[in-house]
Image 1 (spheres, rainbow, N blue to C red):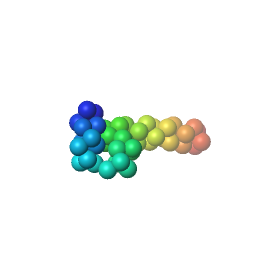
Image 2 (image 1 turned 90 degrees about the vertical axis):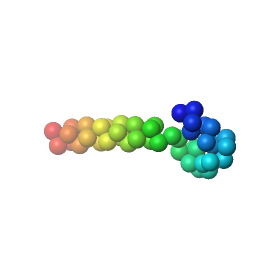
Image 3 (image 1 turned 120 degrees about the vertical axis):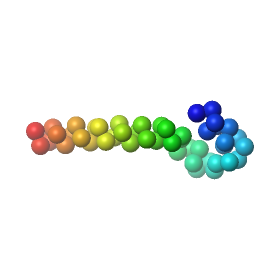
Image 4 (image 1 turned 60 degrees about the horizontal axis):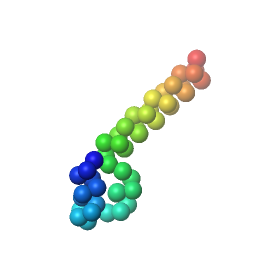
Length: 46
């Protein structure tokens, strides 16, 4: 996480990428959304 901020500070990544957050958090968000969708679909099919 610190490396992510350091890369931004040293202009190795753009503001757009910085605002998206570090890759480790993006993959966690995708996993959470996948779990939520799976749960919603299982309740609909029921």
